Image (tube, rainbow, N blue to C red):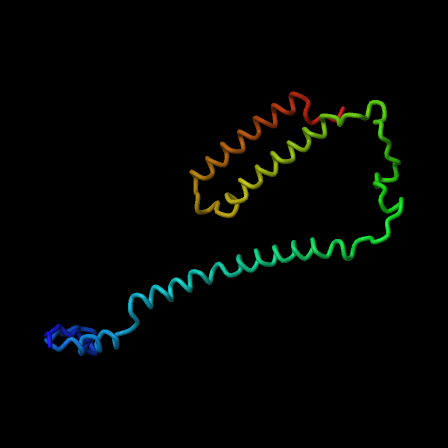
Length: 167
């Protein structure tokens, strides 16, 4: 038999080495604890476990979409008539020709929608600062002040151009 080094741990936590046959080395290694492969497998299983809620959410969303598509024809209207197939236009009878002057949407609606998106984006970027204001300190305050100043310049420009007027 080939002599090998046997490492045993004393109760004080110190290691001592002695020459022993290879069978004793394997027995000593097996009795110390899990192997590196076992530790990595356990860590891998633990790290995959944190994605379980996300996977369940995706499965639930996909199942809802598939079930909705499949049940639509089954629970939908089976007997069609003129009232069920007519477009509902808030009580106004739809006509193929646009009413004079109402063929185009006013630009003010689009500008309002863009301003709404602009303010939403501003809030999305300001919310993390509000949450971590203490940790960012004075540098964070300066960065947010510069960010808000940029938006105020844009708001001033829109105000001067009449973007907030509905006339």
